[in-house]
Image (cartoon, rainbow, N blue to C red; front, side, top):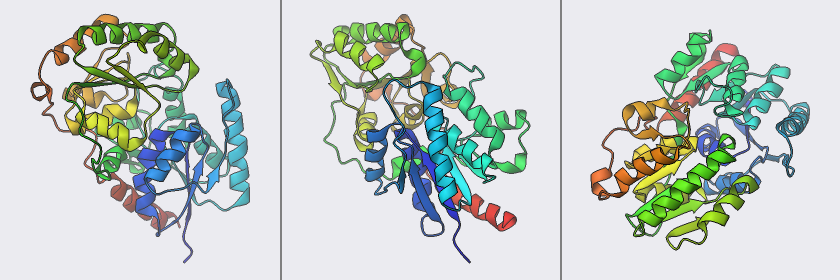
Amino acid sequence: MDKKNILFVFGTRPEVIKLAPVIIQMRGKYNCIICNTEQQKELSNQTLQYFNLKADINLDVMRENQSLSEVQARILTALDKVFKSQKIDATIVQGDTMSVLCGALTSFYNKVPVFHVEAGLRSYDIFEPFPEEVMRQMTSRVAQLHFAPTQKNKTALLRENIDEDKIHVVGNTVIDALFCLEDTGASADDKTVLVTAHRRENHGERLKNIINAVEYLCESYRDHTFVIPVHPNPNVKGEIYARLEKHPNVKLLPPLDYPQLVHLMRHAKLILTDSGGIQEEAPSFGCPTLVMRYETERTEGVEAGVSVLVGADYEKIVDGSSEILSQSFEATRLKAQNPYGDGKSAKRIERIIADFFQNHG
């Protein structure tokens, strides 16, 4: 019997990290076709290399200052050619990016089943995060299999009248990816603060508030090192460099590759972030995390006490950070278990997909 052709569509570094364990698990049993839209061209390809993976198809869709509509049109058009050029038996997407929505839509238009990894995350505010909340809700309308990281995600999908037989709680594949890594980096200072800020809804006034808070903290805690991998988006990069470059205890770095970022999370005393993935990864290392967003679809971490929602609120960021930074590294380590997964998600996903094909031919 011929192997099924499975198309993996992604475009950003977090998607690569979370799909790599699934691709590795499914290789050999299926023809895995790796399609990189290259929403984040350098970051995504660099991260693929880390997992010894290479894209079979690169779409090269990004152009400077293009609108969301233009990105969507480019990805849809490019993916349409992929579907016309070869037989696809299923498409796997992960998360809530433009690549996810376009992969799901193009599959739907071609009547090819969509399997959605990390399904059911919801904030229920269509502008927080923007545009991701709408992307993932729309993807859920066309997916045949929904791989929900947690029970809460499954509950959200059930509320949207999605058939329970199509929803599977599997944990988050990001924890599988962490377990692929050995910590080979140089030992880090236990007075390191990792800061990441890039989300679209934090551009403008909110980013200024975040930078003000970080500036206050680096001046108040001069014995601590603030490491900031700076997102290449000009709306972010220019602001951060203009304000923080002059401080001797601030290290402004280019975007880090995945092993370097994990090494920093493993050793950081505190993390300030608006990233989704870091909210899931940091609890595995016991690192307190302040989430600089007003809404998060990853509420399990907040409920478990492994992360705190502080928005782009200057006082909350300063107060929450000061509480951690004024104590020793050991005193601030989290004891709670990571609520997002156990490192066996990809195995569960592969087994469920095998059952799907057995039942659907």
